Image (cartoon, rainbow, N blue to C red; front, top):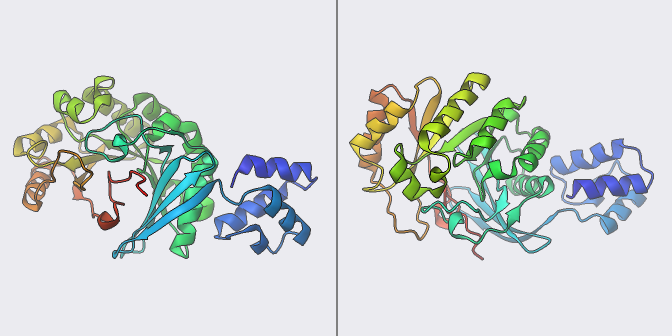
Length: 328
């Protein structure tokens, strides 16, 4: 809900400040409306229902995959589309993939969101309403959150961090929250100085500048060496490994030589590589074979770099990594 409007309304009604915490606690625990908040006076519940919309986002569509993944298409009050994803895993994780912007201004060639028209930054309340919607869709607790949905979080870091402050009340600790960036160095530097222990993930996808610039135009502004230096500084200050996200594109960035080049660019203490099978987005690229991914991983490990292969979730409903495009 619009937390600023809620606060304004409660003060205008002469309500004590603890009412703010009461309302938020109910919402964070999964309440679907004000009328469910039974420790609030009935008259106050009725007034809030009339004056404060329960969500800043209107649900448009909800898709369910066979693997338990749920994708929610939502719309802001000014008509901007937003997608968020709930991913369930056998080990008990219930992870939310949240968006920080409607669309994205950084046009990565392999990403469906980058092919969208950029809308605007989302407010902290709009980010939280994604999380609340996914928690209700989960029918219970959520315990992880990643800012890997639509948009570049570092371009909207004030609102992202404001939302992160409240995620623990939904059951998601700061240590189980990660922010992914294409390498926006001012944001990385600021996150390194923040007291809350949020994890950092870097979308790298190539270890040399010419190829990375082809895949990710932002590299012209912040080249590989500078971005990795900022990530090393983050590690030194936080003592928390940086996740390197590396989408595997057949014949583009998946050769034995490129694996070695990536390994030499990374420090084994500071980085962990997450290899991402490519999910179709309508681009000109094709995904690497399982054999190529396995060989790439083996070469990284031969150099002492920890590497995993991301488990693909929700591909059949266009909810997997790189596929969010708010198609109705």
